[in-house]
Image (cartoon, rainbow, N blue to C red; front, side):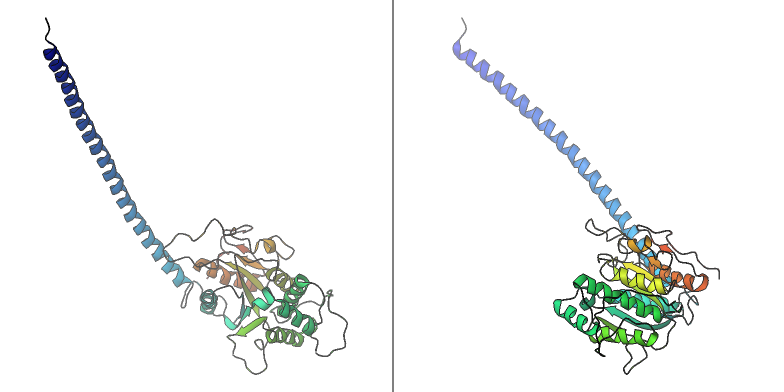
Length: 347
């Protein structure tokens, strides 16, 4: 006869053995899993370390490349030397373009031997005028129309003024006007000669719509003395080209072909970084796209990467190309570009 106590002890022993076996097995599996995971983590850590070393080396290489490119676009550059000797160049820029970029552009032009005649900055009173700015402009220039019409007219007549002072004498042409009939001698008309062009630019300066600096002239002059100027017009990639830049450039290039280079600029890329492009930025070339496909595409040059050293070199070569051969081009990597870079002239 089976003793119940013996049977109970046997069952307890069986379950105890099972528990011990499960516990030992679980400990073994857990240890193997932990070892495996630790090995994977170590592999990943080593991979990240290698990638970090590679990225650091890449940044160093990009930094060296940037430094070399900056030297090519800077003072004493053999790549730029004598490309624009004694060519009078005026740099124009919207107010949103950084002062550092304007100065870097002037440095590149100066390294090419250009006569840096002056710097014109277009102010918010022109590019994004308040009601008071528009009222003052209507009174000073005898204009009628809504805000967009007045702004476009001011930009167009500024382009006409620049053309009248440009390297190529403009051909006489009829132009429509939105000026109100008036006998007021204080009204500044659409310019038709160099003297009126200077008066028009001076009136814009009086209204705070632009500033003129970096000239060696003084007194009542609001623009560099003389004529025969070529122009580099800089705008920001995030600006609306139709507001001021496009009508200004179209008017100047239509009346004085192959004297203007329009350049698009993005925020400066940190040295050694591959890009600063973000998803919310407009596509490269968006600022100059309408000019590249417009009616004056064969009368002006464009560059869509002025913030890069090679973009500033391209701008210098574009000005030289216009002066030397009468050709124009649309350079960079953005929409509508025809080549990354102008053909390098023979030494």
